[in-house]
Length: 169
View 1 (cartoon, helix red, strand yellow):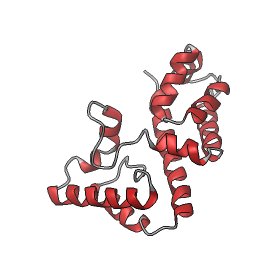
View 2 (spheres, rainbow, N blue to C red):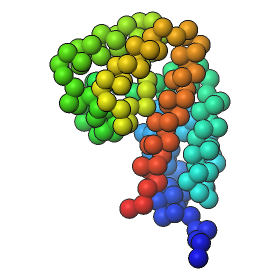
View 3 (spheres, one colour):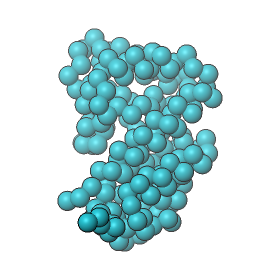
C-alpha cells in the first residue's frame, strides 16, 4: 500500500509559524529572496516539491541575491566557529595537512580577489584535495561562467540543507 501523506518532517516545516519557518530557511540559505519565495509556496506536498521550489527560486536570484546568499558561507577550510553546519559540510578539510590548509587559504584569497566573493562549492562528501583541485580549476573561469557555477553549487547546498530541515525525527 502506498501512502500519499506528507512526510512528518515536511509536515512539521509546513506548519511552523511563519517567522520560525523563515528563520529556518535563512539558516539554509542567506538569500532573503530565496527564503521568501519558499515561504510563500508553503505548504509542500512532497519533499521533491520543496526541492523544485528551491531550484526555481535559485534560478531567479539576481546578482545581488546571489551575493547575499554567498555572504552566508565561510571560506573553505575556515568554518564559522560554533556553526555545526559549516563544520559538517567542510569536514573534508578537518583532517587536511597543514600544507593543504595553507594552500587552501592562499587559493581562497586569490579566488576572492579575482571574483569578489568567497569560493563556493558543495563541500559535502569532498576531500580537502578535491576542494583544492576545484578552486584551482575554477579560478581561471570568466566571471560570468563562475557566477553560474556558484549558482549551481549553491543549489546543491540548499537541497542538502533543506533535506536536513525536513528529515524525520
